[in-house]
Length: 343
Image (cartoon, rainbow, N blue to C red):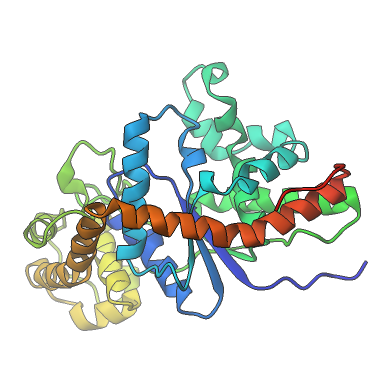
């Protein structure tokens, strides 16, 4: 069998759960914008079908989806350079997911860490079938574009491994080399941003303390205030990264500075090593305000012009289907479906 050469293509998605924060920006949105400028085709998605694996208030879901779209654009995603889509507007995602449901094995799904975490101590039989099959839909999201690379956080790496397993089994079962073995891309100083109040916990919108996170809707004064009050320790910053071991709050703030300023941790410590947090925090606050205030302003503008958001998503879906419809059509032919597939 001749090995297929796939066009380099990047895909990634975020659930529209509302309240975007610094962790979303550094862990995903900023990295997505960086990928857009590398010359590889990029497709970014608001995965609302994933969101409804648990119950969502319909009005909140619509608002959160548009807010996420605004966050993408405000963070540097250009809808002309990238394809920006809402998952449910591209039906091939769900159609390919059903095919993959018939390829994937129950045991694979049951071993997924996120399934175990979300049902731990609960009645798993009361969880939705969609939540159990979530990774199969994620595989379809990626492979319906023949995406070759997916920027992800560490917590999604297992799902990417499952995507590769599904592609491998499909190709083997049908004697084809049709779906690529997508590569996860985990990079950057702050792929996992921690709470400003507890460096051992991931920054989260669900934390009851608003001071634990920087929201992308925070104004400049709020951003600066939260950084000034961020938890630290009494020691000065070390001169090398090894000195940040067992200092989670210090490590988190240095990681944030590095990611915002496109530096390595070692470069940051070369500038600030030996200096107290009373000098480092003001510099971090100034940097965060400079980077994030324009994001907040543009998000606000877009949310006041929701027709513009809807037009962008409609156009994105049209562009996406130029890719997904032929791939789904060929998938159906491989599987043995009879009859034309509407493009």
